[in-house]
Each structure stands twice: as structure tokens, then as C-alpha cells.
Image 1 (cartoon, rainbow, N blue to C red):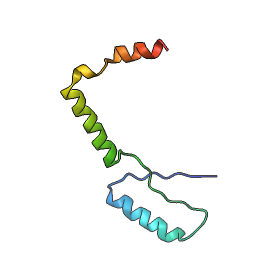
Image 2: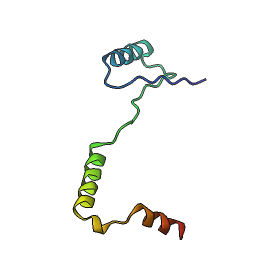
Image 3: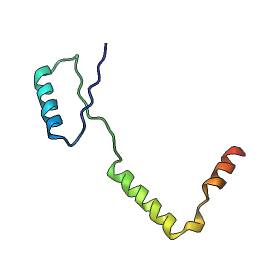
Image 4: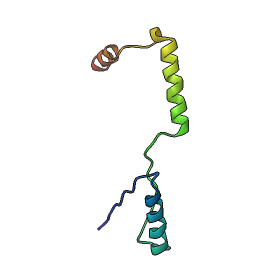
Length: 75
């Protein structure tokens, strides 16, 4: 049987608890502790910001959702 324990990030109590669990299990092959990726990387944030600025500066270059949706349904 597998168990998952989720501890919210940026909480001091959570960091303490993780540290305690790591001390308890040591090098046990039966326990895996890993950090879940929950957010966007800095590169992703920068790329989204770049794209957003492109749309703001050149709205005529894009397509509306209605146009994109229509194109998708016509394939």
C-alpha cells in the first residue's frame, strides 16, 4: 500500500515536519520524499510575460477565441 502526505510549501511547520521525517527514515528504501512541482518556472513566467506584451502591443496579429475554435472544428 502507498501513502501520500501533502504539506503546504512556505510554512515553517511543514519544513520542520519534513526534516523530522527525513531523520526518522534515514536511507530507508521504502520511503521516498520529493518536492512536487506546483508552480511555473522562472523561464515559463518570462515567456508568458513576453507573449502577453506581444499581444498587448500587436492585438491585430492574433486571432480571437472564436476564430481559433472555428479553425479547430473545421479540421
